Length: 171
Ligand code: FEO
Image (cartoon, rainbow, N blue to C red; front, side, top):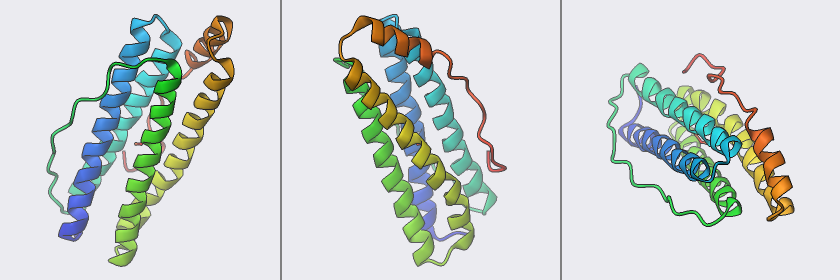
């Protein structure tokens, strides 16, 4: 079993992960509308991963005898002004998710809930990768600026990203 407080936090995380998927879909749509199909592909894969994350929390709550309660998902931003704005927002969003995961880890430690802590460690590692990837994209686009050739090269690179299901028994 998990505590009521932990159950609530895990349910909130399910909502945050689904919101992440929604936000990244909105970014995918922005790039699709600009015919930048590589950037758009990158965020499509990102959104797929976020749905996986949401379902991992969903499955875990059920697995430990808790009750999943799905909250409302707010409308994501859709009127982006530049590629750099999208990349900055993606990084800030991942930093926000990391701090949210950390706060659940803090609660797990406080409650001596070792199994939830063990479950969360996959996400701690994943968030480090997510932040590094988002930071890399932002730095690259800052260097490229409005150079069309650079943007097309980055678009071709991001077109290579392929979705792979999470390597964990929790998915
Ligand atoms: Fe599931 Fe990108 O945080």
